[in-house]
Each structure stands twice: as C-alpha cells, then as structure tokens.
Length: 99
Image (tube, rainbow, N blue to C red; front, side, top):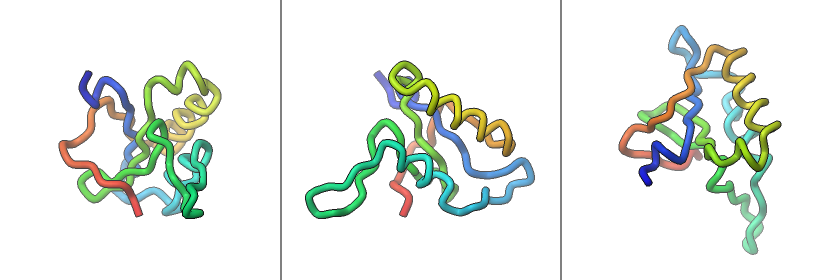
C-alpha cells in the first residue's frame, strides 16, 4: 500500500500563499497523540505528525484515525476548512519531520 493511501496532508498555507499562524499549529494538533520517550523527548505518533513538504509545514494524518479518533479528525478537518487550508491525499516525494 502506498503512502498516499494511508495519509491525508493538511497544508499549512492559506489561500493567499502565506504560512498559517500560529507557526506551531501542526505541533499542537500532533501533540494530541504524542508521548515522551525514555530520553524525555517528545515523540510524535506515526498517525499524526507535523511534516515539511516543499518547505511548507503540513500535518500528516493517518486515514485510519477516522475510525479510532473520529472527533480528533473532525476537529482537524474543521480547522482546515475554517482557515482555508488544502487537504491533500497525496504527498510530495520527499518528507521530513518538522522541527
């Protein structure tokens, strides 16, 4: 199964091509499923993580979350709609975790 079959990508750029503010919006959402590792560093879930695509901060959302966390996915999609963000079913070839 390809990556595009597993995830949605919420693109953190508004309709007028400006980055969404606050700058840590994706980390705030991803924090809902994050946990701390033994090294006491925050670890984002594979199901919900901030990523960079072509230099634009995005939120990668596992489609399977719609079954296990439907309220969270609804909140994310409502947020995207409210702020005019693009929801993509497909990512660019190279992804890197947001810092």
